Image 1 (cartoon, rainbow, N blue to C red):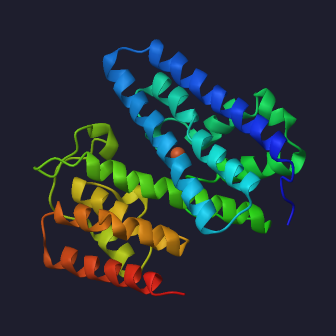
Image 2: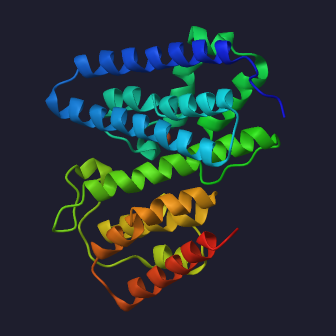
Amino acid sequence: MPVLANNGFMNQITDEGTLFFEQLVDKFVRASDFAVAENLHMKRDHSLRVAANCLYLAKALELEESEQAFVELIGLLHDVGRFVQFEKYQHFDDSTSEDHAALSMELISEQIFFKALDETEQVLLTEVIGGHNKISFSSKDSRTLMYGQILRDADKMDNWELVVSMLKRDGTFTLPTVSYNLPKLPAASEPVLKSIQAEKPVAKKDLQSLADFKLFLMSMVYDLNFKASFVWVTERQLIKKIYESMTKSDRVIDVYRKLRLHIENRLSEK
Ligand SMILES: [Fe+2]
């Protein structure tokens, strides 16, 4: 397995990448009014937590120190395109704007620290960040595949934590953009329930209500890769808290049971 053997070089890349992130956030937040800045702060904090989650997983998977630092940097930078996206469109919906992962890579590939990486690392970073928000992720390269899986798990872990922290007593979220401004309808849609019955992540295109959005979030456990991720999400009871905020119909109770079984099976793996 090719390894970023030189810790000194990796430290330099990490420092420069972190500085790029800080300066970018600063530039966009400074140019924004209060409402926009609130959304941008949310994305900044998300990026910082995804970086921490990436590091947690890299350690759980016992990666070398230089690899841990690289994975952490990937977590920090994966969503930089969100800042450009929100400035241009005032929302985070890729389907009616642009692919934010592609926007992230456009920005990153212009940076000096990116150009200093060798080609293998550049390709890996492009595949991993470019693929972090796609329905599924695969790569012929085993290291790229693992990094992609780490980032996707780390991203989901934080999305769960973030939405749970934003849940209000009435079941809505403090920032409506979080749930794509979907209407507060209690009933779940048929295609959404069917996806979970089939043990598949719910597709974004099927979302019609707040209930659908919550099931969509919960169904992401079907695309979670590592046991350490299941441990993390279970310790925080995040799926349970999303479920508890929902109106319970028989169908919803049923699909939740299904989701819980999947989580329990993964937790019992060696
Ligand atoms: Fe993203």
